[in-house]
Image (cartoon, rainbow, N blue to C red; front, side):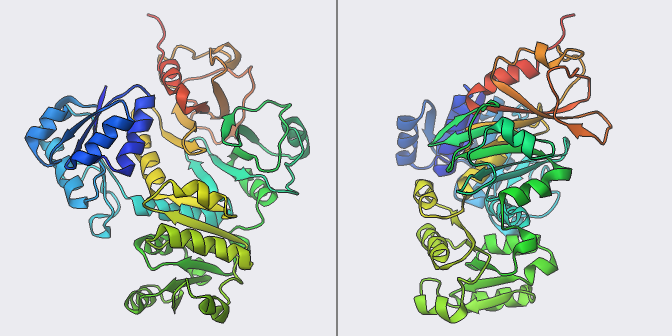
Length: 456
């Protein structure tokens, strides 16, 4: 199937790479010949140079019968208009997705209401929600909630002295009560599915699925910083991401927040809109300012300015001076992510990655209730409802040909309140909601297996 991507920038390239790995046919349409040439040089794709709002160019790119047209140019207006043209002119296109950053265009219930666009993704709102999720749980990587199955997923880097360090998964299961499963481990850049004999080492990053009702206990064992412990929270940068984050917080949580911004006019605007927040006018790069305001005496610092380098430096400097936890926002250059992670920063949030993850979830929503990723997209977890006619209804899990490529991480019964982690004797029933974990490279296998129908 063909996917047309409007915009061959960093978001478009990362999304295309993801889709090409799934053997999708990708066509770029971009106004820059340099970006088009770079896309075809790096990826197995086609690229046309032209305007995303030119209906003839859209036709040439194959938008008329594409599985999806995704607009991720740097212009909100271009993304809106291009998707609007596709939605109104091409009746056979599967879906249209537009990346929109401006708050003026956004609100609840927009999907399908603006120019007939199927889905709208706000990169900055996605990043802000990730920051608030970190504050709520103290979990700095890949925190996601599966609403239908009633489980949460997250990853955590194992530090020296952590309860998991130096134990096998079998030992951990015996020593820690509750319903959870380790679905993957990233060790020195390599991701693998562990067994009960796998020994956890310092520096490992583990991915877990946990029953939501028991998640607080697991958070407490893995993290010493979450909302109940955060008395002083610092946001660096009076940006739209900071605004989205504050809008998502409760009044009580906002009272613990201190916003640092060097532009006095921006400070005045935030102070009027969020009277609960302490707003400081000063440059985060000024060492004297750190000392004067005792910024390092905080539980959590998120650097969310529009400058990637400044965010990394501020988050790293805060940790060196005594801040308990810090995260840095990466907006323009994903190549900084490994550097930031090597500088004692607890979490790195990439607007590119969060945007692409949101788009991928929309692309698969016709077959899967939700999808989230771990380890920079290397591991995927699907929330899938067993449909009528599924070939393996009534079969035990051990008799389903998962081929060693899929882990069943959780199940919730149809119309039931109970969720649990099944064993091999579990019988699949119509309406069950199941969580499946698999490497991204095995997506085609997952799709084929989970859409298999009973023979008539």
